[in-house]
Length: 474
Image (tube, rainbow, N blue to C red; front, side, top):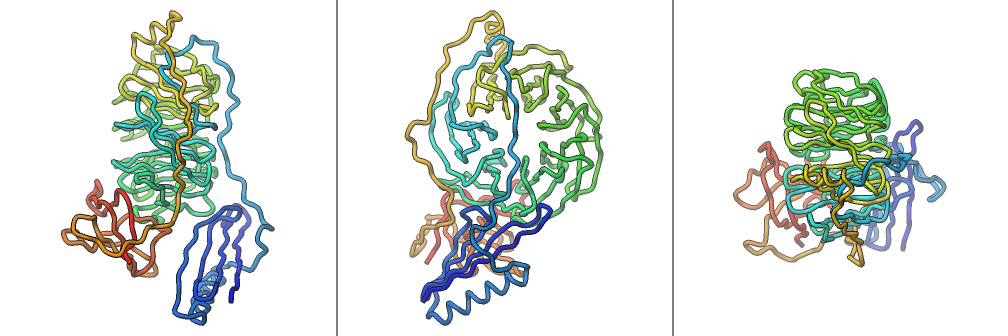
């Protein structure tokens, strides 16, 4: 006694492009959903008898049909193309930079984050590796699609992918933290205190909160928005016409033109930086958009970063060169990466970390002594690192089931239905039960309780975030 219903919703003009499949097998109902051409997420439920399983399935199908889904032939429609950053990278003629170590990730790499203990790199194959600062590989996550960028929010690490999902990488298994709207082709993302900002191909900026609920969206005067930076002041959005600052409520505060299209952005506490297609890095005051400095490179700038406070400004061009400038705009040096052009970069403790077009995560010694020696042709020995046979931990919606929670095992949370949405609240003593909990959407089951390793108060003190492993209580 089995039956399968397959539905699709595919809109023209870059709108929704997703499927919904319901399979009834005796007393079990299995629902698979996601973007057309992708594996999708899977949920299963068991009912008392076949009749009740059929009734539950019919209810789900009816809900989707009312939203515009229609019967379709599986496989007839293909996956929509997504935008992937392309650089025609040429070889630099500058002296070679002092590279301490280089890790081969296996595909062009876009995502990078350098934390206190680890370096993170994500590539076009969906691989995310963690390494120590001396280049030792410590972990490997597997995401369903190419990694666009990796960002941090306090203790939490997130990766935005071409499948439109943002994954929480803070536990042993990656899980979906945010599901971006189906018509958003992610170019870049950033996060501050649980509020996620996404910039896209159309030049829009979209903002969602810690419970993955839409807050606001603004069109830009340009397109190809490769820069979004979230801060207490709101969102700083860079696109083909310059940089625009929106307040936390989505109101435009100021706009600043740039020389060339914005291809990358960086921020410090009081300033934002925008690298452009015309070889500039513009420095703007967050308060009013006033330009305080311009840094001139010899080719289009695809990445930039600064040392703390913006004392030094770094840039990477499409000719496999990296630059360093003093705060006032004086160029201090230009060197070759030796491993392609930098898609992204980050500075930490006199080291400049790059992810590049050939898939490398390279660690450069950016100290004045090492740079001066490199300009004289004296380079440190370079360590070349490979991933080896380290296991790939795949993203999943599966959750281990346990029968009970003993004192000290963790914190119990519960999924509750409120206003048509499934929200999560803390059940354990000592927590405010009116606060929401940031929790993976694709494992939420109304009425279910979960055991999480740790629950922490957000930086803004208005919601909770989980950290560590999640188990479902039977």
